[in-house]
Image (cartoon, rainbow, N blue to C red; front, side):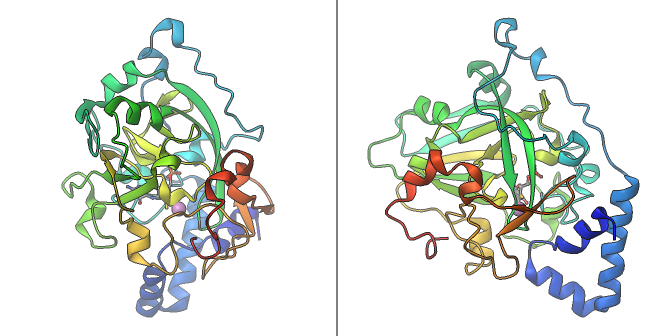
Length: 324
Ligand SMILES: Nc1nc2c(c(=O)[nH]1)N[C@H]1C(S)=C(S)[C@@H](COP(=O)(O)O)O[C@H]1N2
Ligand SMILES: [Mo]
């Protein structure tokens, strides 16, 4: 088998119930044909989309057009065509390699983001204005999906803490809730109840305020393409990818732990914290190793996705085998 075929064989789609349904309906032969088709498309790049969104540099003042930051992993970046053509974004389709083409015409300007809840200065902000207000930085982070594949992505964005500070959270606030766009007209995957829409996520307030946590508006120097969560998505590099909610319309500062989409869907499989942890297997996938896209062989998965020195202290009082 080639690496690409191995990849297709090893990477199983996220929801077990979908895989089961597919199996019952079409049988094992059809399922394997499906996997072969996926491998074929990957090998031949049928329908792979290039990223032609505007350059971020055209939107930031010349003095700030150097976006470099100290936050960068020293590993080979995953090529942009893989970052932009291998996506999880169920609002469009559950087929990772079709998200880019299904989402191609998704319009994300103008876009309003509401920040409300337990804050002294709630507001609704235009995302292009936010882009001008906050200093943008490039952050080269590892991205680890619970399906046991990973990438290294050069994001462009700003710390979520900056936005939360601006709305002045009340002293009794403890968590932050996030909500994606709910619009089946524009997001065809939402016409099916594969998930409970809208997609929602959450963080503890201290996780949200951590300097590693960013709102991303771009990648590889360009405005985010639709498939990666345009125009604004969350990136929390020490957690599994599903925490990185895309196309956000509302951020609410709250008192109690908010519900999260995958936890609701399968509570025994997906926890609220979802910190990358090689020691806690998912019921269907060991988390001990991972397939870095574009690489042969597998790598050992690192605790907190390699960010333990920066974030492990946040969880001193938690048993992460229980609070997964
Ligand atoms: N709104 C929304 N956000 C989402 C998802 C989704 O289906 N809908 N998928 C998540 C999962 S499972 C992963 S692994 C990452 C994938 O991000 P990428 O496609 O930009 O690599 O997005 C996350 N954010
Ligand atoms: Mo994921």
